[in-house]
Length: 466
Image (cartoon, rainbow, N blue to C red; front, side):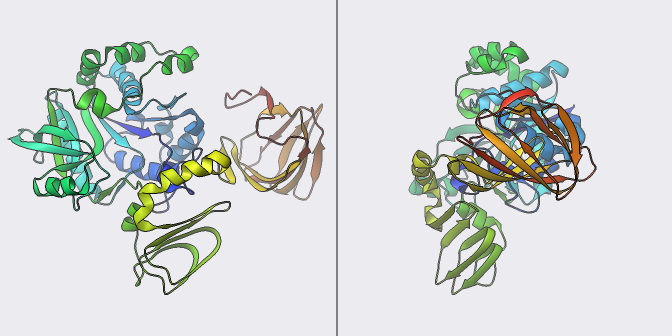
């Protein structure tokens, strides 16, 4: 038996706004420790699978960030990153990854896991995963079911029956039925009746999955077998928006579940993050430069600058460089509606942070007006921006640290700290870091339009166009 793992690294994490945004969602943030949620997930999985057996499915917009974060753990894990041109829910993403593995090893046993979950008891998780693999060899679709500790209304539920399946290292039961997210009274009944939370973690044999896909979703099966790099965007748009639960799990004949208590959370809201993190003597979770007085049972998160609180109780205060959220912790599930209102008039606040990640490094918008923008640009060693030009703006570059290799029109030269150059409008130009240390520059843009889409690319190391 060869073990593979698939990480689903999609979603925008709207309920964790303003930290989580479309271009840097929660799975790419360090919310539960020093590593990002993606890195924590990959680290767990790499304790059971080899780096070249780890597949990650993400959105095209996040491909370079995902690769960069995985490379910090294991360079070989970067090889199997699949980038969706458009989001189409979990079943198409899983099918795409599984088919890649199926072509290599039809008998491979595959585990599918979300990138944004927190698991404190990794030993219990690994034991449950291995038990699921043993049963998956008998052509079962196996789920990891979380033993609930409260009547939660934010999760789907699984009802196991009494038929224990032989062969697992832990008790594994056949699934009697799946139940949608219940109201509180039903959730309380489920708790008494031994129902499990549906974690969205699946384990199965590659050949069994492809057989189920052909039987229950023949359209997806045909599409996934015919995907081609040169027409991926057009083909991927034909996939239906369908989840793994609806598309296969609830239709399959042989479905099993491993009940497990592994201190699990999907970190889907500020309240769930509050529950996970250590608290002070007043029951507060404090992150960053925070001063609190007569504040209890609250989550205070300062990303930059100081947050001071007085006389608060059961409140979440989330501060970023350009947006601040203040809400009752019990209303954390309703943030999605609030973000919708923000998006109507200020879509930039839901899409981007002031610091934006690019494959070559980052840029931070320091100040912006109708005809100017000031950025701090950091270029990683050995990286370079595209050869480009702008139709509506000129740029002034001042090197802050490191050594810049610059193409400006027909000239190529290097600049050291405290040296500068001017890039006229419509000039071809490029910024590169050929040194061993990071390069930092301040860029001042001036023109009648300073939007990010005013870029004409002539050459790009990372395959971007525009």
